[in-house]
Structure formats: C-alpha cells, structure tokens
Amino acid sequence: MTRQYARDQLIELRNHEQFYCPKCQEPVHLKIGQVMIPHFAHKKQSNCQQTFSEGETAVHLLGKHQLYEMFKKLQLNVQLEPYLPVLAQRPDVLVEKEQQQFAIEFQCSTIPIPQMETRTIGYLQANMIPIWILKTPKEKQPYKNGIQQIKLSPFKQQFITYIQNHAHIITFDPEKAAFLYFSHLIPLGGYRFIANVKHLSIETQHFPFLNVKEPSKDEFLIYWQLWKKNRQQFLKRRLFISKNGVQDSFLRACYFMGCHVENLPLFIGIPVSKTSSFSVFEAEWQMLWLLFLLEKGYDFKYISSYFIDEFRKMYPVLFINKYAVKSLQDYNEILKKIGVTHINSIFDETALYRYLYVQFLAKH
Picture 1 (cartoon, rainbow, N blue to C red):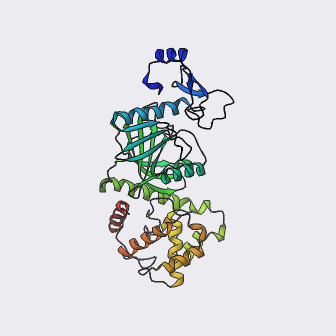
Picture 2: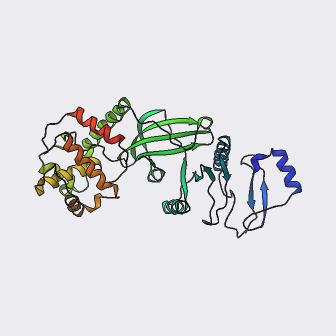
Picture 3: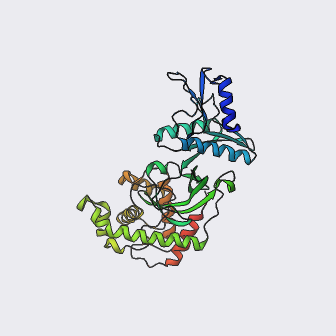
C-alpha cells in the first residue's frame, strides 16, 4: 500500500527491493511519477490477468485511494483492490461492517452495461453488497444544492441505486474530495429527471451511504411545480415530434377521446413511476390506458390483472420492465381515490397532489 509511505521512502524501497505480483508471482515495477499516485505495474508482455491499477487514470487512482482512506478513518475493516479468488476479480475497495462485506466500484469511464451487470451478480452471489459510485460528471454549469431538473445518459442511469424503492445516484469527485448525490429521482422521460441534489465533503461522509431525508411537503411542492411545467412543455411540442402521422397511437387516442393534446386533464401524465418503466412518456401510456378501458367498457374502479394482460398484448412495446405493471396499478389506484371515472371527470387538484405525495413516499 504505497500511501503508507512518503515519496522519498518509496524511492529508497524501489532502489533496494524487488516487488512481485501476489497473483502470478512475476516481478512488478514500482512507479513513482509526478502526476499519478505511486503504484505497481507489471512488466510488458505479462500474462497476468489480475493487474493492479494499470491503464487507470490519475483521477481513478486518486479516487479509490481517497475512498480507502475515508473508510479507514471511519474505523472500518477495509482493503484496497483485494483479489477475490472466487470471483477472479478485484473491487476497487472492499469494506466490512457488522460482518457484511461491501464491494465498492468507483467508475470513471464508460464500460459495457452487461459487464456491470455480470460483476454485480457475481458480488451478490458471493454475499457481498455491490456499491457502484460514478465519477461526478463535469457540467458547464455546476450543480447547486436543491431540487432541480437534471439529465442522465443511459449509461449514468445504470448507476441508479434503490433505497426503500427511492431512486438515487452516488457520485464522487476526487479533485474536490466531495460526493454529489442525486436523490429521490423522478423520471420525466428520455434523459431528463427531477432530483434533489446535495454536495457532501468526504470529511463529513458516513457509511452506509445515502442517509437522505424524505422530502417534506414543501420540497415535494417544488417537484410538483417542475413536473407540471415539464409536462405542459412536452404536450405543446408533442404534435410536432410525431413521426407516425395518423398512425400515432397517442394522437389517435386524444382524437377518439375528444381531447386536445395541449389541454389534457392533469390526471393524464402524472408521475407514478420511480423508474423508467415504459418506453414512452407518462402522458402517452396513461392516455392509451384510459382509451383501452373506455373501448373495452371496463369499469375504472375495478381493474383486474386480466385487463392489464390484455393491455400488454395490445401494446407490448410500451412495457420495458416488470415495474411497468406496478406503475399502472398505482396509477389506477390514484384515479380511483380522486374519483375519476371518465376523461371528463371533475377532480380536486389538491387531492391529486396529496395522493401523489403519499405515493412518492411509499416504501415497498
């Protein structure tokens, strides 16, 4: 562990000692440069597959060493890049607390999603809890603390962690020695989300991570206002982004229901999902669902699994994961609570807001 020694001590050690890889037993170099953290590297043409820090950026090296030191200060049992024979891989940091091991992966570059999934499954099968930490993304306008709209690429969305069914992302910036949380995410469609953003210095970080408070009613009101603004902007431009013309199922649904796209009732397009469960925006699948119930003559108040299966068969491309069915059930439950039985039902917006807040805080 090179951080245990000063630079001059490392140079002295390198001049008088020979180092070997604990896996392949081949000689390794101790590199002591001016930019990167001192680290070991195999010689060229090495056949060893368990390399230490080779090909990594200075930021990645700095980040995982900072995380290692942070866990040490928290008086936890911690190892840096330990080799796990059962998995034939090395987590960046391995932490143990109360007899539970946590594999910490600090990701600074894009990797294939299947590779992330394979490593995650491997850790879980080894009874380790994997925690993926994304390097804090560089933005033209730095994020400020508070509730706001953000953009997350499909790759960044792979780092979403669910705590009590709420979506969060942990990021870390080694250059600032600080964490940046994107908490209580609500998907708006595509790359866009509403999140509660919070900066936290490494000195004040605790473990386990993500000990975030539930949003208050006043904070959720900000979510509500941002969502309504975004929904209206989407509906205004929806006519112009259609590529299917008269075959556009959403526009056809609006036509048959006698609704103008920009003036849909507020209960169409409400954020009932805590993850992106459908391939289209909330307003689109909800409108198609209401039209489906109307055409089939089904009662809004009594929705069976049979109805949902029929809807899935009619629009199979809408459902992108298993959570979509739960979202649809939650949506119908909210409609029932606010007394919606048809497209022109009179409802109380305050009651809708209140039920959405309860739904948002729901733990499963």
